[in-house]
Length: 335
Image (cartoon, rainbow, N blue to C red):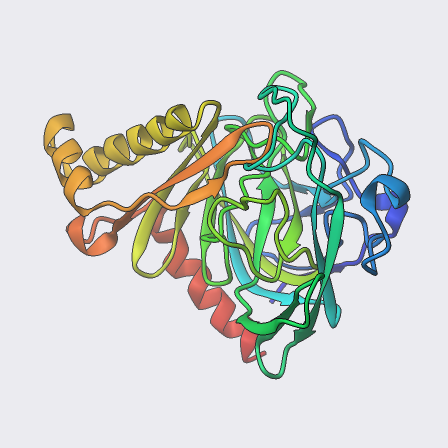
């Protein structure tokens, strides 16, 4: 079994997709053990650590990588299967920001009321109990919330030598912030440049759909991912697969365009897999699909379109990459 471990120093973290040399090369079939920092680079540790004072823009939302996948060329698809996503510390943080989030004025949604207060919440992470403990700031209220670790940011280098800030989701992936991207899920990313150049970051111990305040339970993570390459198969927008569902994503503003992108991709993908004509696939997805919200706070919003695989007639997806990587993950966990 080919296993690679990588723990970046702070100066090794990346803040863009594209425009950066690879930190390492891996072959398809490799399992990569990664450490990822939280979206504040570990600098917000206590409720008095205001991000505006301890962080420096644009050095937010760092990712670990990029990794060059041998043999990956434009027109191929990378498959990344998340074997494990585990909080690396016994604490995590969340915040509100002035002019950021779904329920405040922003530079593109101008309002006359004052901006929201910048406030930090610190969560206790108890891995043994599987909970994150929320503590209200202005009362003694607290409650245990079940951990559901996921990665808000995963992607590849965009095409045409473009470099995109890690906070922006688009067709290359990026900061999609969907809680669907948890352990046991395979994400499919279209390759735009030689090597693909994938990066991962922005771990969340827990996040509600939409990431409405602009941040989740932001946590450093120890993550294990299995890498595969599907040659000669393009993927227009990031897609995901778990044991029971196929998922398409779309990222844009306004939110309805992100919704349309994700639904369009799922309808056309379903048509391709089942042989149904477009309108028959449209009807099936319309009645059996789900639409979880990724984020409604980033520079682009993200929607997910989700369909149970039971309704697609058992069609193989990406040469059964998910099943193949699940088997590799099982070997790793018993290794």
